[in-house]
Image 1: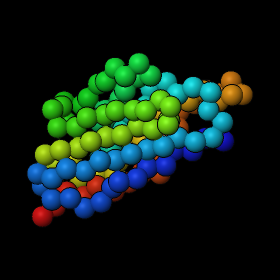
Image 2 (image 1 turned 90 degrees about the horizontal axis):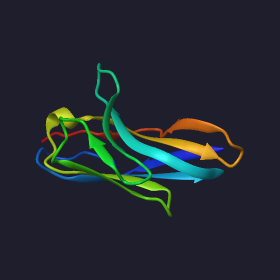
Image 3 (image 1 turned 90 degrees about the vertical axis):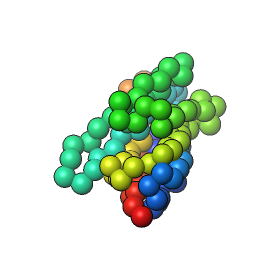
Amino acid sequence: QVQLVESGGGLVQPGGSLRLSCAASGSIFRINNMGWYRQAPGKQRELVAVITSGSTTNYADSVKGRFTISRDNAKKTVSLQMSSLKPEDTAVYYCNADIIQWSGVLGAYWGQGTQVPVSS
């Protein structure tokens, strides 16, 4: 079984910074893409940032220049450093990873989500 566990969410003031982390565990042979998504109240889940196994990154236009995604392949973790946060960044943030298990099964896995309210 595979699990993704997020940490680091919480209330932050506009203009502030926050770092989210996500750790994968279980019967993992290989992790391909890892990413962060978010879902604001009343809106659909959207991609925030993605990073390939070779560390190529891609960002939503709304977060370019403010957010940075990184990963540690040895530790099976992905992080999202968020800066210059705005109230419109308020959402539940979800970690996502494409994982191949030792059994050969390939699947997309999600974390449980972590709340990031941006408010004064």
